Image (cartoon, rainbow, N blue to C red; front, side):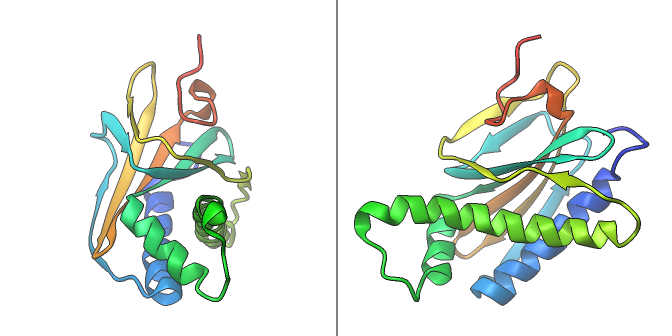
Length: 174
């Protein structure tokens, strides 16, 4: 997250704006409060379900959307209301909903930044269903936005440099 790379504040702001818009316009879920934390984040608390993508520009950076269980269930219910889903397939569809949401929002937010001359590559989303904490050390940098809704919270995390982590946000061995 150095100077020649993506402006982290602008990226986090673009993701937040697109997320608030998507939740409201596509899912009918109003964001009731939001906050951003750029330089003071020491620990990331991953919620019930987290969708993760890596973005590559001058450096690799992870983007993580971490959902409270109640919020991702509500998003799933709205997103899949026209589908007849068997109970034994429900968990798979909940995870796919999280992957679709991050794909759409991040793609649109990065398209906004690309319109300003920046091209950023993305990996397909990976979904983890493990609440855990990631402590900041070994030169890692974190930035986060927290969104609250009547159905639960969503945290957007920017985690870098990506070379310090694997795809489940565990530190790699040095």
